[in-house]
Length: 409
Image (cartoon, rainbow, N blue to C red; front, side):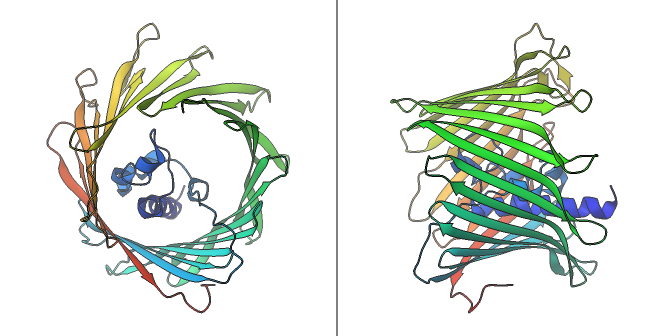
């Protein structure tokens, strides 16, 4: 991978992270969507932590489709995210993300722009994400997403994502996503296809099966992985989720069960167990996450997740021993008031230099939101050997104004 390609990939991931702070898109985090949409991802925004995500921009973004509206209506909502301090960079304002959303009838247009410093230190457009969502009917919608890199005023298409969602009269819901990338000649080539089908077996139960297809060396596409997910909810509100992930062997072509996840969600908390293959190819309990939720007498809400694993920050426990505590993620929500809201996230884990020692605080994120749409987020980090130090400060503001005569092309 060239340095330019790596830089573009990092910019795309950074855009995804920054957008998640204010666009309320759910990301991979073992807790509720409410937590994920606020501070769960905050401390991972720093460029030095981008590689831990390991996901592409297009398939990481999940948009909420608007309801169909036959009456013409134009709305414009703009948001801006600024990284006003970066401990690893001499630039005081190294990144900025601007997003605008225009709604017209049953169409929604969204443009997101990541600006990065040029050689002269000026912020210039680097990555542009354009998205159009069309609610064709109550049972059918389409979404088109295009990702561009920009340099010296010239935009270059990186990838395109086309998504179609159809709900049949029988209740079966099918989502098809096709990601394409231009080849050396600029022609669009399919790079990934994903088909997801959800069947409801009752008012409180469903099964979702998804298949991922990638280009084959023999031409065309071939399925490389499958995921089956079942969800059930009893009368008491207890939700049970079971998921299995199988991968096709590149040698024999046989399907191999790689992972099984079981999750039980209740009002007071949840438990998730992950089974992965051992050295003999047999599934064994590899990780367990236990989440507790409660409200104290002062009205402050708390959520604490403890993750137990066989792999503990630098060494592996033998298979005949119990899982060890790997990390703890705590979220504390102050009671909302007329002045806004405050959320504090803390992460504790073992030190790499002392894996058998106790947990040390390595991350703290404080997010304060005001009623006028402004959000101030301070991120403190440490390697566990010393005190926490501020590494980044992120400010977000929301601007609402009249929509332009036509959406941006």
